Length: 141
Image (tube, rainbow, N blue to C red):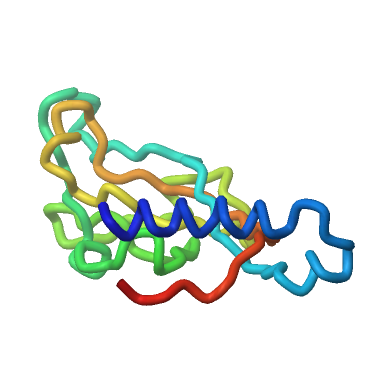
């Protein structure tokens, strides 16, 4: 909490320091960074047996189970589900309208809280934005 308060005070001080400065002086304090923004693209349910709503016919593939959420990109050839008969379901077959160059990132993989909502995992699309901000070196508290 203390770090948040110090950062807020530093921002206000820096903002006030830029007020009334020329564009050249204020630009010297500008920083540019890239930030990743994620938006939910698909919500996938577990495959079901013969249209029955209660019986799962597959589970999350072991290769997907340990993936770092929102860090590793999935391709159309990535295995998503492992069926009880040993076969695999690939992302391209589960999400047929997915483009070949579309980047999807998994999150909420096999979360127990979402099983009752029929959510096996959520796939998010990623967009990178460039942001400009004013900053100065903050003393370490």
